[in-house]
Image 1: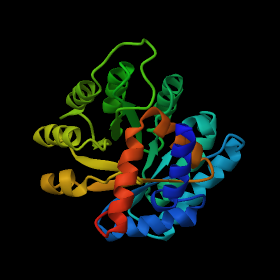
Image 2: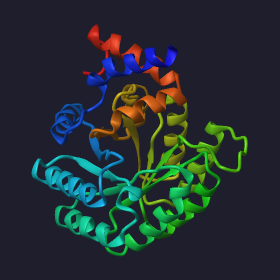
Image 3: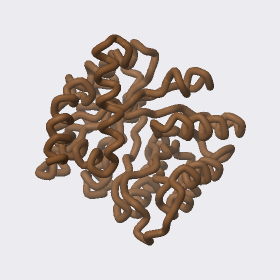
Length: 279
C-alpha cells in the first residue's frame, strides 16, 4: 500500500519536476534554467524496446537542437544503450564536433563501468570534449579517476545508486570526499553532483583550494542548492534534465531505494505553490 501511495504521489508531482516524454518538454525547462543563469545537461532516456539506431538518432537530434537553439547545454548519453558501439559513437562525436557540444557518459550499474571506460579511451582521441561519471560507492572509481585524469576527461562525481559488489561497508560521504581529493589539482574539471548541501560545500571548497575548475550539478526535480552552496562559493550550476518515456519507472525506482527523495520533492512542491520554491 505504501508503495502504491508513493507511486501515485510521484505521478502527481512529476509534471512539475520532470521534463516529460519529449525533447520539447526538456527545452522548456532549459529556458527556465537559463533564466536563472544556470546551464543545462540534456539526457534523453530510452526505453527497453529502443534499438541502438533509435537511441543514436535521438542523441543526434538533441545535439542538433542544442546548437540550433544556442543553449548552454551538454548532452549526457548512456553507453549501454549504444551497445558500446564505437562506430555509432563516432557518428555522434562527428555531430558534436561540428556543433561544439560536450558529451558526457552517465553511470549505470557496476558491470557497465569497464566497457564504458574502454569506449571513453577510444573516443577521447576523436573528440576531447567528452566526460565520464564516477560513483564514489565503488572502489574501482579510484582507478577510473586515474584513467580520466590521464585522458584529460571532465569528471562528474556522484554517490551512485548501486553499491560496490564486494559488499564493502563504506561511509558514503567520506568516500565521496576521498574521491574528490584524488581528483583535486589533477583533473581537467570536476562536477560535484549531490543534493547534500554540506557534502557539496566541502567537495567544492577542496576543489577550489586546489585550483581545479569545478561546478555544482543538480538533478531537476530535487532541491537545487544554488543559494545554499553555489552562490556563496561563486561556482556555476548546471542542471541535469532527463526526458523520454522511460523516466517514470526510473524515478519510482529511485524513490524506493531512497525514500528521502519523496520528502524533498513533496516539500519543494508545496513551497513552489506558495511562491517560495524553484520557479
